[in-house]
Length: 493
Image 1 (cartoon, helix red, strand yellow):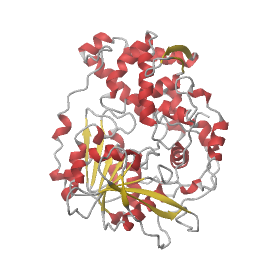
Image 2 (tube, rainbow, N blue to C red):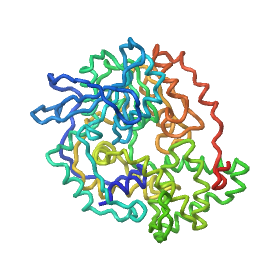
Image 3 (cartoon, rainbow, N blue to C red):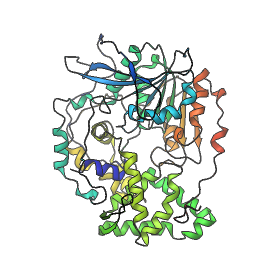
Image 4 (cartoon, one colour):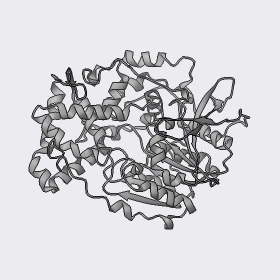
């Protein structure tokens, strides 16, 4: 079974297809009045943080609309403020994917948001279906990322994965119920209002929170914005846009243009070659240096490069890798594959499938799909990765207003990277159409997730102190040097 290796190879290169037949209806945010067991936090240690934090679980109904004896535990981590007396409005952090667990990223997030943590608690929640909150894993420990090719995927893989979800109602693992879980955690911790940060899919979840439970939110930060109006999945156009920017930046850079004069043509030639014939060769493993068999098809090649475009610095290797691949030197590409494997390993892919196959992909129009098939970066592949998955995955129907624009006067900071291959600044512009109190900041030299690449985390801290855009200094976004490109394997730029 190769579910994990496929998704990791493509790094969220989602696809769509015509879906038919639904079972299950997700209701809107109104829920019965429930009395939950207390959320008790105890001292604990988590990876990446040297000091003690607090961990606990809140037991919630699996089905918020029809509560019964069937429950699940929502895992919570609180990183206490450094100040002895913390401010009463913490910063809640919602992760991306869908399929990332907040607890597993706590170490990095505590460093990123250290300025905010000086006087505010940080709260991370494993969304239902991730981490320690009834995880929907869909992995194969025996998958060989180098030897397997993505086209090996079969319908039996989907059925095998689904068979592991015994006694789980997948229709309840949706964005709206996740918000009810987050809201229950807020109440259990005794916070009257919170500041809410959401990255990538987490920004989508944050916007649903804004619609369903606006009174709970003091301020909102959306980083790599995914408005509900946008269909997530067929995103080849966004990757093509980012790749075109990369090609132009190389051509405008004298050293890069001289070293890689045929970069775009080399890429298209490789892509065309792999469409017709899988490369099978023997190479040295990038870590062990032992001989391994490498199999690469066009989907694996495209997905691996796309993953590299997420980060501001990671993308600088792409021209070198394409050029060497064209010369049949595959070792740099294999090294890149291992980096992407690490980056994607924290995805709970069952939740990814469950949400995208129901909340997004059924909304993909014929026009959108046609445009996706013709994009210059990945072509038809953005419409293939989930084809077999979604047609066999159990169905539910989101609330009727799920894809409506969010109308809100909550102070909202929007953050975008001009180089982003998945959530371009234009998506934030769609989101802000219903926001009457907002500011959109664009980093021209960054990719996906500004807090990980720029000074944006400091801007977040400035913003939430007094919930004032006047306090935010964004000049630091323009002070980053223009990214260069790798010219040779010695690291010269």
